[in-house]
Length: 205
Image 1 (cartoon, rainbow, N blue to C red):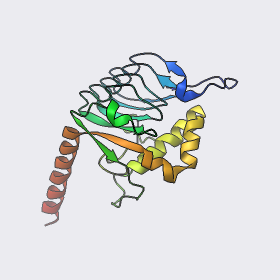
Image 2: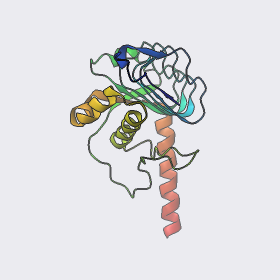
Image 3: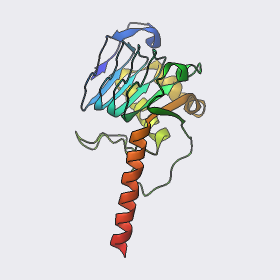
Image 4: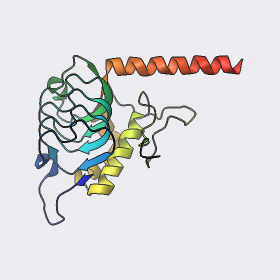
C-alpha cells in the first residue's frame, strides 16, 4: 500500500495528516508506505506488516505482536503500550520520544552504524523474498542495514523528501533513531538462537 501526496502539493509531510485513525489495525502481512502522518492507534495489534510513516498520533504500535514499523517524525503519547513483538524504529530528533513511549514492556536501544558480522543468512534484503518473507532478516541484529533499506523503499515508493534528507545525512541520522524492542520478544529470539546453535553443535559432532 502506498499513500502519497499529489505531485503538485507542497505540504510538509511530517506535519500533514494523510491517513486517519486505526490504520493497519490487526494487519498480518504486507508493506505500507505513507508520505505523511497517521492518526491515532497506528499499527495497533499489527502482527506482521512492514510500514513506514512520517509521524503518528497517540497509542502507536499498541499491542503490536510482529512486523516492523518506522516513524520518521514525531509520535503521540503512549507509544508501544502492551507491545509484545515486532520492532519499531523512531526518529527522535528532539529527544522527547522516551517521554512519549510506554516503557512497561519495551526497551529503547541505540542503533549502531557498524555492520554486524555473521554468515549472511540473517541479513536484511533490499527486496522481499516472498509474500511470507519481507527480507527483514535477524531482528536481533542488522538494525542499521534494515532501517536504511526501509527508508530507501519509502523514498522509492513515495518520493519522500524526509526519507531522502535522512539518507543523505546517514552518519548523523542513525544516532537520532532508537529501536523499540519488546523485552519478552528479545528474550524469545535469544532463546531460539541458543537452541539453534546448540542443535548445530550437536549435529557437527
